[in-house]
Amino acid sequence: MNQANERQYIIPARYRRMENMHIVFWLVKDISWCLIWRELGLAMFIPTLTIAIIIAWRTRSIKAELAHNLAIAFWISANGYWMVSEFFGFDEYIVWAWVTGKHLALIPFFIGLFILLFYYAIHFPKELKAGKTIAT
Image (tube, rainbow, N blue to C red; front, top):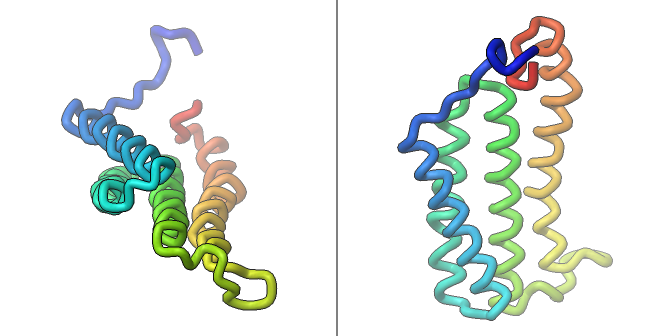
C-alpha cells in the first residue's frame, strides 16, 4: 500500500494530550521509585494507572488497541505493586516456597501477557484475514 492509500488511525488531540501526560506521570513515578521518594512515587502511581485504564476504556471498540492498552494497565499495576513492595519492605518476604512479595507482581504481568497472546493467537489472524487490522 502506498502512502496515498494508506489507512489512517487517528487519535483526537485531547486523547493524545492525555497519553502524553500519562508518559510524564509514569516517568516521574519510576524516577521516584529509583530515588526512593516514597510519597511522590505513590502519588504518581494513582494518575498513571488511572489514565492507563481510561485509555483502555476509550479504545475498547478496537480490539488491537484494547488488548495493548489493557496489557499496559496490567503492566503499570504490576510495576506499582512492585514499587510498593519495595517501599514498604515486603518485597523479600517469603509468601510461599521461593515466592516473595515482589514475585506477586508476576500475576498482573502475566495477565497482561496472556491478553496479548490471546489477541495475537485468536483475534489478530481473524482481523488480518478480513483486512480489518490497523497493521494492514
